[in-house]
Amino acid sequence: MFQKILSALVITAALFISSCDKDEKKPEPEIIKPSWIDYKGTAPFSAEIDGTEFIVNPQTGRASVTDMTEEIQISGSDYNKEINIGLIIPKNTIGGQEYELNGLTGTARAIYQFTFSGNDPADVYQMAYGKCFIIQNTSSVIEGYFYFDIKNRTKPYPTVVIKKGYFKMNK
Image (cartoon, rainbow, N blue to C red; front, side, top):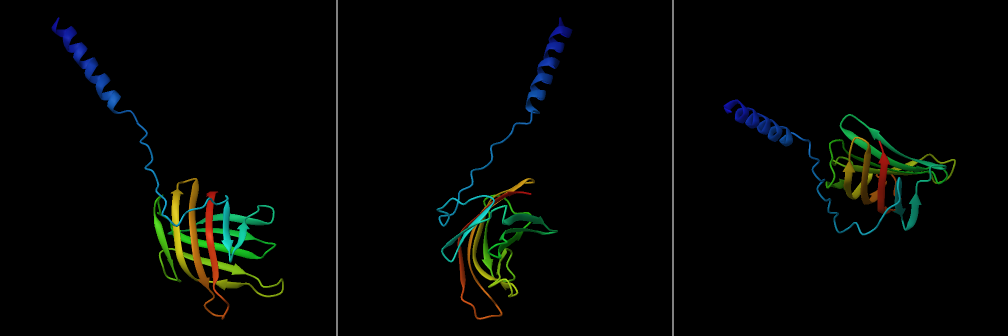
């Protein structure tokens, strides 16, 4: 009788312990967007440049993610318009993080590159001031929002205003 009770206790304990070891998927915390994100962008990459809509079309441009040693570079290009917008953020960023885009040396940076005409060399704007907010950065997808004002640091061109920026692409 004692062996039956002991066996029943051992089986019950084993079932209890094994039920505790199950991998329960915890729900992802809800990402609360900052108040400046009051729009929905277009994947894989979109923005508004000085009031003009910019959406990367895979047939005339490219949206890309480049995984570097300590950073991730995200860019959207239109070859017909000869425009490229790029962001650089820390590689270890997670959903819910917001970065200040602050010139050339900040944790997160941005570039805007364009060509005036087919014969002129590209002008690169690098002095960006704005924000970037990451929705998700997983092993397979990166998604976020951004805006910035950017200046050409070597030529007296007017400031370019980039608003309503959005990206979501596979890595």
